[in-house]
Length: 77
Image (cartoon, rainbow, N blue to C red):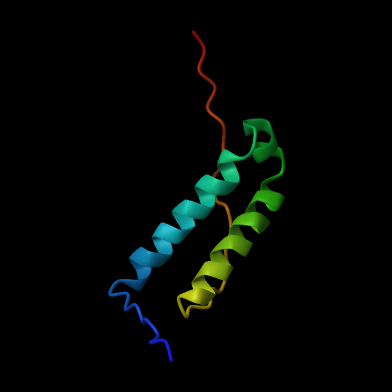
């Protein structure tokens, strides 16, 4: 019978923060800026799905996930 490997995470907040960063990069990196800014609800839902799935794997349950303050900065020369 194969032995099971158990990984202990010392800093749960740091692990969850890392997973959120990876989800943000994956979802936002796959979109055009205009798409991101005009459809924040869809982006938020995608991020939430990814983060909830990974949090569950870590034994965590999230209360809420959302995007706050996502604005474009236009530089003019």
